[in-house]
Length: 275
Length: 294
Ligand SMILES: Nc1ncnc2c1ncn2[C@@H]1O[C@H](COP(=O)(O)OP(=O)(O)OP(=O)(O)O)[C@@H](O)[C@H]1O
Ligand SMILES: [Mg+2]
Image (tube, rainbow over all chains, first blue to last red; front, side, top):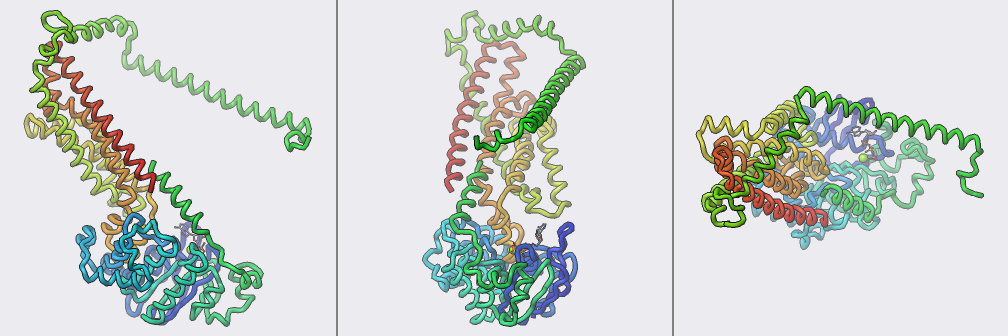
């Protein structure tokens, strides 16, 4: 059971997350929804401890996650894998190398630094890749893959951590509709077949309703809705997004950065950073 | 006329024009003021340093006559008349020059290795703990602000004459200089890969090794090559204080008035530095191209 108690994160004067209390039973697939700036990303980062809370705490069973340090903290991060909107892979490293990084908590630091991965870890990584039809791309550099492929590598990396929880921060926001389905199906399958708890930030309400057991709506850092997807009324959706309810629900497609724009930006930045 | 600008009423245009002129005049005034202040500062500095232009003009002849003398052999002929005589010491000088290059090379390699090891811990984005980052930065600052010659002198006193003091002096200065350049490069990386690795439960060295290092590697090599160029120049005068290399013979030739030896050694050093500059520049450009193509 993942328990979040009065969790608060303050950035300067902004309360990005403001007194959130939630409990998530094992094996649930939770969609976190809300407009941009609602605090969804910050909440997931607080759970993984990429950020430290200003107030409140996170408990996992008997484990007080907010008090962890050093190796204990790393152990927790390994147990709650994170998936990012921009995939956050190591672009210059090959696919298998990226997935193996998911084993880096289990492996001693000097071995990991020298990429002396055990055969067994390689086998785990390859079979995780193969589950998403990526086994043959193991030797390819990650930054040569399409967005959908990169996200599948990221999910494979998360899986080899053998996590209890997966936190996915807008995993489909940079993907086209077909890849959106692939990635969401993968998350749902992991959730159902392996019983891994999934918390998934989504800004597409239709997708959230289609895939999740439970929706948590956030606005200005607070939880303003918590319940089954079908119990979310139009007026509640309205409050969440600050739009006419009909607009939200009838939105044909999620707002997304087209892949070619994203990769062009990436290329620009690379070129800029090379000088 | 349909342009927006010409449709403005005349009075409004005059008003804007006047405002523009005032702004330009203010800018020009500021520039003039700055130039005047700069000139005054230069004059004051010259007076306080007892710079005497007349004396400089008076003594410039000494300099040109020295230049003339070093290009003549002992028997009065121009050095080019007898290259064999001019470069009588070529085998010894080549050995010393090679020693200089080795001092520069090993010193650069040691300094760069040290800088590589610590630079990530000095970068604000990768090392949030100020009690590690700040003292480390001060230490790097110390290593690069103390001139190489001072370190070389101290080590000569401690370890005696020879190439080891020179090598250590170059290594320490390089450590400080490259350490700063390296952490500045590291502070401009894309943090997403680092977060991606950190979030898996990887230790800090692993997150840096995989998340940060691949992004900075080409830049680091380029800076290290540039530093090698600089260090070849630096190492060639380390011999002045007895810290090894060609500088030893150069200072001896100057002190003992072996005029033609001075020009022979100087030209040898200049030629070496030019060749090294050209080669490393080629390599660095190649690197930048490869990196840009990614
Ligand atoms: N590192 C930071 N420093 C300062 N402010 C931050 C930081 N991270 C987030 N914030 C602020 O906290 C608030 C919540 O941000 P967060 O990224 O959690 O929102 P979000 O719900 O994930 O939005 P989006 O849908 O756009 O990703 C925003 O006002 C944001 O500007
Ligand atoms: Mg977000």
